[in-house]
Amino acid sequence: MMSARPALAQQKFENLDRIDSLVAMTVGANLGEPGGPAAPVDRRLKLAACPTTPNVEGPVFGAAMVKCDALGWRIRVPLVPGGAAAASGPVARYGMASRPAPKENAVKRGDPVQLMAGNAVFSVSRMMIADEDGAVGETIRVREDRKSSPILAQVVEMGIVRVPGFNDF
Image 1: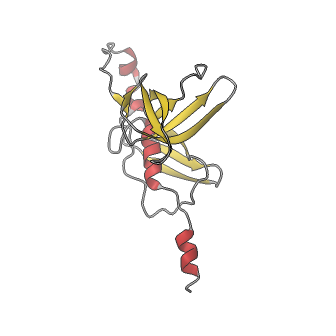
Image 2 (image 1 turned 90 degrees about the horizontal axis):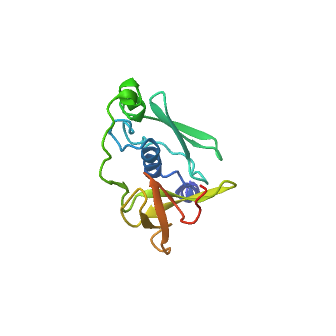
Image 3 (image 1 turned 90 degrees about the vertical axis):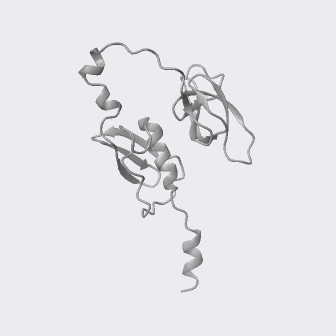
């Protein structure tokens, strides 16, 4: 019985906070906001740690789908009604043009961001942490963890930054 305990302690599970952040970044809304996750991922889930960044698709039928293709697991995260999908109806399409909003930060310090690099032939991405706030078009510092050195990246959209110099992306 004693030997089973260390094996369980070493077993790695998927970081559910990371899944919550990935879903919020993909759908463009935070927890409880229209179009955002209705609730955090159930903390009782013990998903095997995905060796790559889990894939988030959606919204589809009122939910985001989070999948780890490498291991074969997937979960459904219900979304609050009234997000971007609801705003694309006829009223939004043919309504009055809105004024451009003042630049708001698409990335906040400490947020997980997806660092993209590539061109028309290839692309690569990696999850990083933002060192500072930034609006779309601004250049900010990001890093893999607290001990790694920062990399300069341009904010493309909420939760996505790219390495400058790859303009065909």
